Length: 297
Image (cartoon, rainbow, N blue to C red; front, side):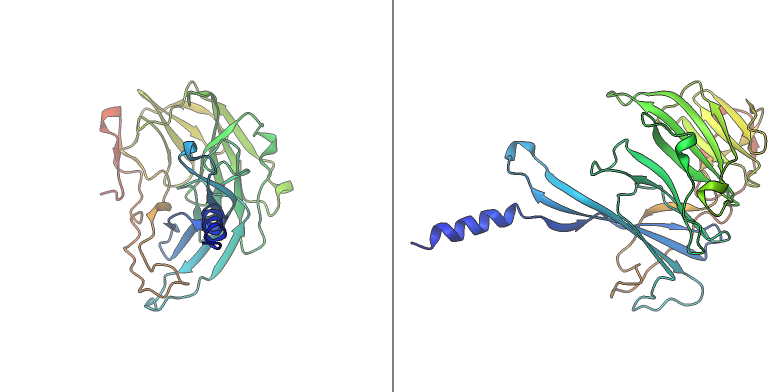
């Protein structure tokens, strides 16, 4: 009995020790359908000393991006990624895009240990040496990055920003069209800013790039507006694409099935990329004709 107390204490302490954990791996296809990016968010967690909290404590988030070449026949034992990139923060779910023609990876990155919180920035990286652009000229501390969507040609990114209150209402929303063709943050000087009447994170508020990257459409409840990429001019759209999902011709599509990673020993199973027929056609003129599409017909 003399050893019971230390053993019990050791068992109790182990319940509150920090241990590694991770979220489900997300996947997304490039615009060509020939590359796939996996996004894995990892962290440390432990049980709280206060049982009334009802949740585990988490810290030290980091994200691993793995980009795979899907050309040819995949090795069932797992092909290694062609590129790896790691950042010391969490990544917002569904925000990672890899554009193969420009070799750029886009994502929304958190800045603290509050996963999914409002402290986040848009980020860009490329294995060819392009690392990011500086959003400080249009992103202030009280604003939250709600969406960060690259154009089909990868040369411009649409950012939707807003101030969120405790009730999750969004105030002073605006859309930024930022150039991503520079090689460093000092080259990215071209951007357009458009104030929006309102924005809500509900299905009747959506963003959609045109197929040729010349304009972006915004569904704002009962109307659709368009913004020109070159001049930033905003106007009411007389007609617009029927499909408002996906918002661009590549990007995240969901959770990766078991064994789809190149560093996995399980058999790899991948379904085809769903965005290959991304098109502006058919164009429609009425809000009630808008559809969410994984493929255009």
